[in-house]
Length: 373
Image 1: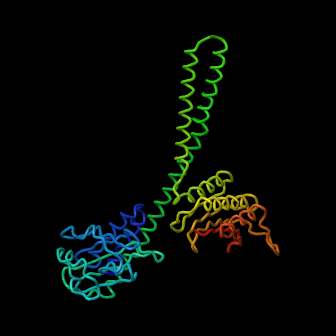
Image 2: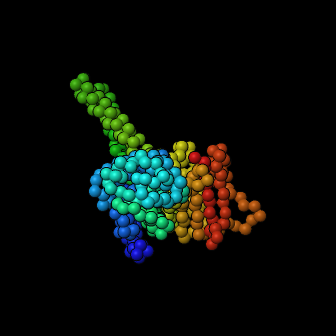
Image 3: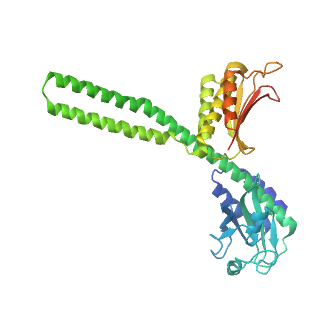
């Protein structure tokens, strides 16, 4: 019966994948658990920190005693699952010797007995813990753990997709803010400069022709107002242009990618494969420079129809890879990267990173720049 329900869940999985909000994904997943396992109550624990789960989104609960509970790692059933990253169940939560009983009073108030929990995992990272419970003693066993684990796996994938989509949206927002900042600088900033210069010239001319102190005072006041407006504009431009560390690399590489496509007409995509850690500005700058130089080489030599730029957290750092489908590397006994890539390689090395250039499996060239965190 539970396996049949998994088939129905596959159809709803497509709907889950389209959601952009990780919180909405979790809520939707929890609603599916009671029917899938034919159990009484379900809820989810989401990491509130590296060592604590926060319980919420309970379904079919009679009270509100579960929502808002903070479960430390290793404590109770969910805390054990968070610690071991393995499924676990108990026939009677109140009396089981396998777990601590810190939350026995809440379980009694809700009338819970049997309980099962599985980790929601992605790349060894705990995204949450999915729970199910009955109001009577039940020996869940491996079959129930498998079914709940399948649901948790779907939740993990959908959550990661939602996180990536949300991050891409944030990158796009800050990219647009920087574009607006540049336009304001080139238009309003230039106009304010012209106004200030014109007022200064007019003030000198009026003073030399007539004795009109009141006119000079008015012109000076207008000039001061224009200067204040220019200063306020410069401050606003700095705020608009500065992206948070979390999305700074994505914003920079997206701008480089977009500029390349607009300049060359070559189909170019940027893909963020994993969640990216915040990087120091020096690392963001060198990875962005590596991207621009690799794209410049594609423009000059590759004759490519398409280019893919990927960002990924790997090997304790972050890598940017530029792959094209062009003519590939010239057959040489030793490949000469040219002055541009050689300079980038030196800059990466000074930060503890590296640059690699290789032929693609199906032709073309792959340029990979990596820096440690």
